[in-house]
Image 1 (cartoon, rainbow, N blue to C red):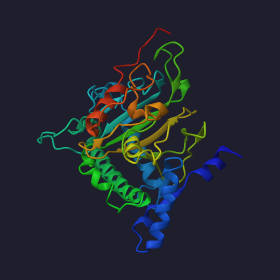
Image 2: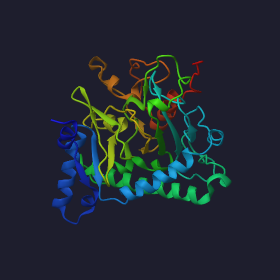
Image 3: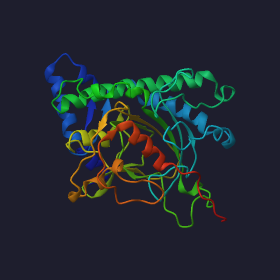
Image 4: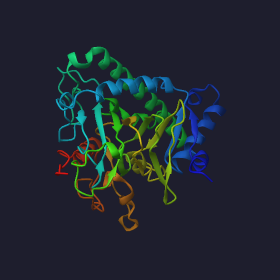
Length: 349
């Protein structure tokens, strides 16, 4: 049986319009679909939203406008260490492992007013290209896209609540002001043959995105038709292929921990292909001050299956000792700092 055939059986496509149906039977059926998905793979597709393939293609063109800028212009707005992830990062600028991640990214979030002091480490103004470079219309399009992703994420979270047997706003109540710290990232992945041999260390493994789980509540992924996203399931890597007019939903570490691992936070990666690949990844976070209870049975070694509990600095770690409960936001800020790499190490070819 083909990989695509296995994925057809494994991954559910949920029409999010059914979550707002006046029919309790229709709503319940959608919740059951989600429950089956989040407790088996932690991944499912959603359809019935405004972020169609046509919108994806429009946003891909918008992303290309930025990524095709001269490198010197993009490097005017670099992501900086410290956990507040806004701006540009080039090839080798971050990695969740020892591998060289052959991608570049632009990160932004809630359009925080420049004259209002942030209340935590994950809030603050976005870092945009100079106005004369791309213009305010480009920025407005990006901000609208962010708001649309927030709306969809909230709708999915309501579905997650129903799927777990809670009132539909139960989990959403943990996300108060989560939209002000959430993050939207635009990625462009490069074919291996386009990577300068002087980037990285000799013999360093190259990949699109290192195997990892997502740290937050849930992740929405818009991918183009190039493919490359893979899920680790039943001891093998399996493709999560693009399906027209759908978005991939990944459950995150926070949600898995809050449900005592009832919800799976899936291990996944991005492999490099033969052409440029574009994707848009929205990390929807709970409230900054949400309590993150990191107790677990260390005898089972379960902490190693969740990236949130693993040191992802330059050298891979087997995991940390069991830490006390902490605020989600402070932990996430430290996690972003862990994957930051000052620059790709360059060697003479």
